[in-house]
Length: 203
Image 1 (cartoon, rainbow, N blue to C red):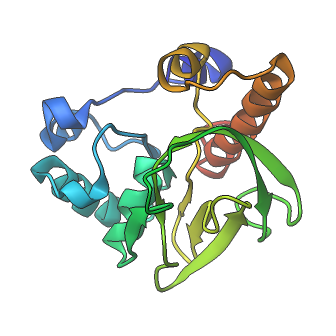
Image 2 (cartoon, rainbow, N blue to C red; image 1 turned 30 degrees about the horizontal axis):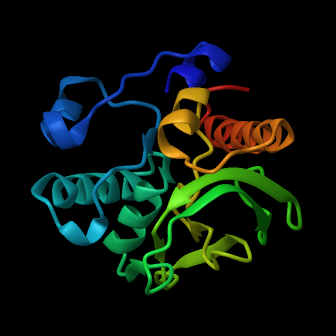
C-alpha cells in the first residue's frame, strides 16, 4: 500500500478487515475504487469477516465501483460468483517467485498477447471461471491466473503486483535475481496502474 501511495501520490485508506472487521469500511466516504489484498487465511475457512467482505465487495462491484482482487482477493471474488477454490496441487506446494502471465483479452488497459511478470506466493487457486467472467490471463503454473467480469468493473490476479521489498523479504523463501525483482516490480506496477487508470484515480 505504501508503494502505491509513494508512486502515485493519491489519498488511500487501508483496512485490516480480518482484525478490525468489515464495519471499519463504513467509517469513510464511498471511495473511487477498492483493492482486496492477500491474506494468511484461505477462502475455504469461511470466517465471518470473509463472508461479510465477500458480500460487500460483490455489492460494490454490482453498483459499478471498480474492484481489484489480488491473491486472496482474486479467490474471494471468484468464490462469491460461484467458482471453486482449491489447492493448486494435492501436495500443497507453495508456488513462489516471479511468473509471467500471458494476457488473453484486450481489457482494462491490457494488450492481448502481452506478458506481465508478477511476484507470486500461493498454495490455492481459482479452479473454474465463474459465470459471466472472462479469462484475462494465464500461465504455465496457474490456468486462471487473471480473470475479469464480462460487464462489471472487476479484474483480479493470482499474483502480487503490489509486492514491496518488505513483502518479498517477509513472504518469499526463494532467492530472486536482481533481474527477476526488476521484472516483477515492472509487471506489478503495470497491473496497479491499469487499475487506477480504469478507476479514474490517475490519468
